[in-house]
Length: 245
Image (cartoon, rainbow, N blue to C red):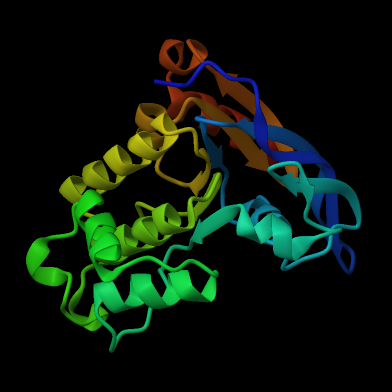
């Protein structure tokens, strides 16, 4: 359930980015409020990764602004990153360290110091199997690694969570469990931006959907509109229309 709030946590305003003669982003704008899950849909090359890299401060926009928790990423990337957690398609963790050691180490890098019992409690909260907590990450499935990533976000008390293809490669059970975790985070007021190709999970889990194609936001669905449309048909309609233009 989306919290009753209009507090924008992730803000993208008239964002443009070009690489040589290729215009990757053509002035896109959107916000993600506290407690909201926004699914960013689009084919490969639509501009999803470029958008994420601008939000993370890895790319400088040509024009426009991006901010996290009211902090302009271009002006103060360090403070902006302190407000967010990022989970890529393949979560980057230390394979020889255990799940517990990874959460502890990553948290300390972010300046967070908790007890081992508190870190263990976070891993239990994200439903990492108890037998895996003290085993090396190299033995984990993708779904288990993502749970460790969520635990790190919880330790960091991030107000914004950015995910890139979070359910890619997960079996239906692991995908459902991960979606349940995202719902819990949104319920706690975290703003979640999820770039995905998974139309089913987008319609099931997101409070709003933005369809991105050829560097432009071509459609935005919110609230009841999410339940009143056949998302796959709408998505294909927009992608095919743009391809013909």
